[in-house]
Image (cartoon, rainbow, N blue to C red; front, side, top):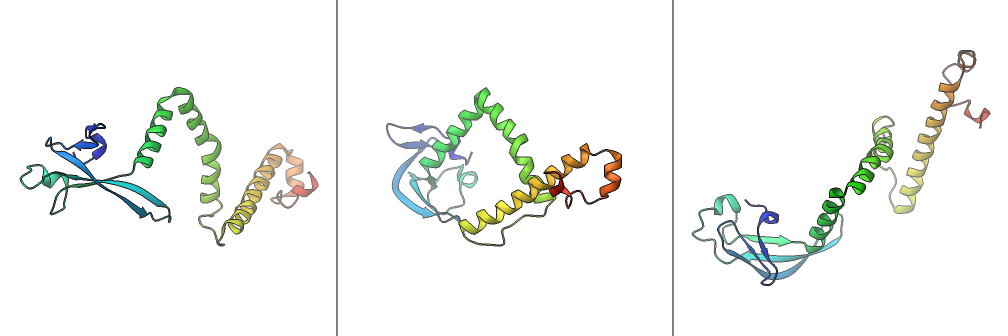
Length: 169
C-alpha cells in the first residue's frame, strides 16, 4: 500500500494516484548526496490532502501530507535491469556470472579473509586487489598442479606445493 511503485501514474498530468484515489502532485525538484557521495536528483510529490484519509496510518508516519521522493534515473535503471532479467538470453548471462565471478569473490572473502582494503585511494586499492588476485590465481594453479601430481611426487614435495610452484612454470 505504501509502495509508490505500485501506485498508478498519469504521465500527462505528472501525478500519482494514492490508494485512496487522491492525487499526489508534483511539488519541486531536489538534489541530495547519497552515502557514497553521489548527487542524486529527485522529484518531490505531495498528496493534495491527507487530513481525513482512513489509510494515512498505513501510508505514512508524517503529520502532514504524504510526500514521495522519486528518482527518475534510478527508477529507469531498475526498469532496465528488470527487463534484462525478463529476457531469457540475458537471464542466462546473469546466471553464468554467478558461476564465473561471484564464487571467486566469495572465495577471496571467505577463505582468504580479505574483507576490506588496508589502503586508500583508487590506485592503491587497485594495486592491493591486484596482489590479492595474483595470490588467488597462484593458489589455484598450485591446487591444479597438486591434483595432477603422482603419489610419488606428492611424497617428494610434501605439503609445500605452493613453494615449489616456480619449478614447474
